[in-house]
Length: 264
Ligand SMILES: O=C(O)CCC(=O)CC(=O)O
Image (cartoon, rainbow, N blue to C red; front, side, top):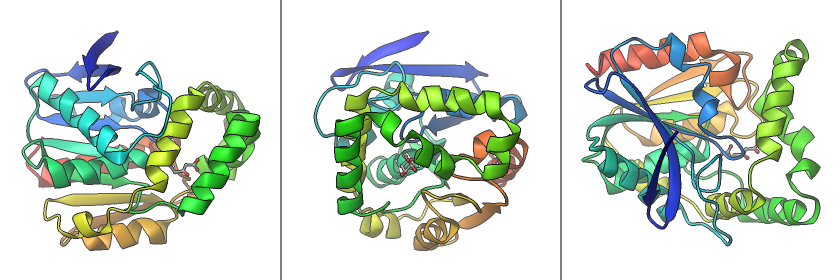
């Protein structure tokens, strides 16, 4: 287990692969932790340094009470990369992780040389939608929303064919600290990265899932279009978590991007 105290919280991370390899960093979505990437990593080329961490409020990372701000989440990611001596990584972020990716590239371009914006956007939902969600979780816990969330995360076909694994994702979601879920929901509610993302010029790949009920393909494409020269890839048949449903295709498109950047 790898833990470090940063920015006032304990951060849980995994630094795997080749310690001298080109770094690829992974940032998870709301209600998951760094096991989000478990099915993907075995399909990536050897020789990379693969760093994953649990976002503030998730997994084994600290989950303070109160609203979080996107700036906190970006500072957490930057502090971890500084701690690990990582520069010039390719940063892969899914959903809120993709917002962190956009914020990090805007604030600390010395750390990042390319972005993978997976199932994310410059702005996700509306403040009113997030306030409703926050109130529902305060009242009934995450379990009150669990069925609807899983429907957005994973396609009907995958859920039907993988009932046992589906139970694991349900457990991960429902065991997310409520303070962490609420804190990160507040951060998403307050975030609109349109202006700063429109100023980004680094190589960017956007990935969407055709069945994604949280960040539908058109929303992901809109954000990709903000970054000049970005690429867009649609994974057909996958929901909000395509790295879980279709890890081979996800790995293939990510590997092509890494090769194009001379990162492998
Ligand atoms: O997944 C995220 O990080 C936020 C987007 C979202 O709404 C996820 C969900 O459907 O619960």
